[in-house]
Amino acid sequence: MSTKKAYGKPQRLKFPAAEAENAWLGYAFNAYYRADVGVAKGIQQEERKGRKLACAKGCSNCCKSHTTIPIFPLELLGLYWYVTKIMAIETRTRLKPQLAGHVAGQPCPFLLEGACSVHPMRPLACRHFNVFGKTCVEGEDAFYTRREDVLTPLKAHQDAAYEAMLPFHGFVTPEQQQTAMQQSYVQQQARVLQEIDWAHLAARLGV
Image 1 (cartoon, rainbow, N blue to C red):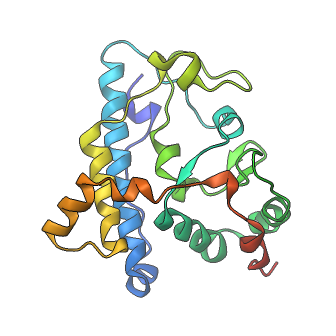
Image 2 (image 1 turned 60 degrees about the horizontal axis):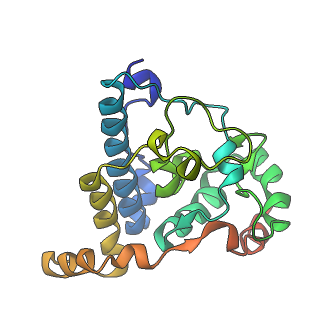
């Protein structure tokens, strides 16, 4: 199977007007693009070894079984923006009660009818998690049950994604960014997606 069919060619998200008003959006788009490029390369390397990507549209087992998905401040802001400004009204209407009623430990609140409702703005953790061989069974976390089947992100691209987020935190000079990367600053800002009070976002949805 070709990488194009298995994963698709990475493309940077583009919302020029929104980026002009919100510089932080560009940081998020850059981070996601860098991550996607790395994931595509990683998948291609595994395919050359004869491995087949099991993840495909319609498979959402990891969205249900993973209850400690890390999310960074820039990603959280991006989700708020996407849901309130970009998401179709019909989807927003269906999502609102799910956000309002979400409690810690439940599956990802953005999973609607087995599909990711915020797929373009899904967090780095979701982008990086890819499984080979066979799809995960319900309740399985392949990282623990068969680690050898889980893609290990290419570090250079993973770091490049973190680096793209640094300006959002005020690290703009090469020296500042180098220090921040050495201290794993971005990673230290992570929160657990399922532990966030998503009712706050639901309250902002005028539907």
